[in-house]
Amino acid sequence: MICNLQTKNQLSFFMKENILDFLYKIEKGEIKISFEKPIYDGNLVFKAENNWEVTIFVDTGKWDYIDSIKTSDGEQYDFEDLDEIVEIRNYYPPKDVCKIFTN
Image (cartoon, rainbow, N blue to C red; front, side):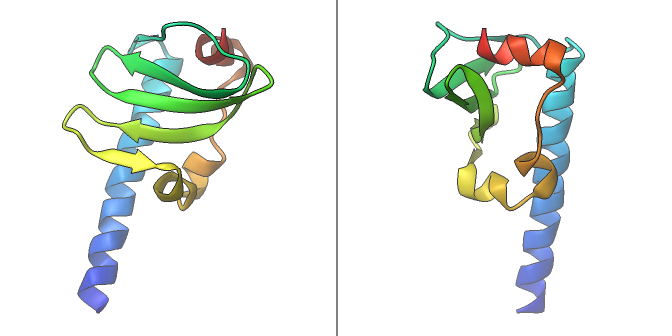
């Protein structure tokens, strides 16, 4: 049982570090993202040039939370996975970057 917990914790650490690195690279303009059209409410899917996808839930035209992330190798992290990691649950891009996600 202890081995399973350690493996889960290691996966969570690896997942957290990779996802936060991805988000910070978007903030710095190191990874470009695109989307088809802005929406007022619902899930907005962004495709990144590194072949990752990030789905943001938009509520009344504003960033609400990260709904899911899919990596280039096909790993899928849904809201339930992401919500367990405090730094990702509380992630909100800086105001000047937020417009990239919701305009």
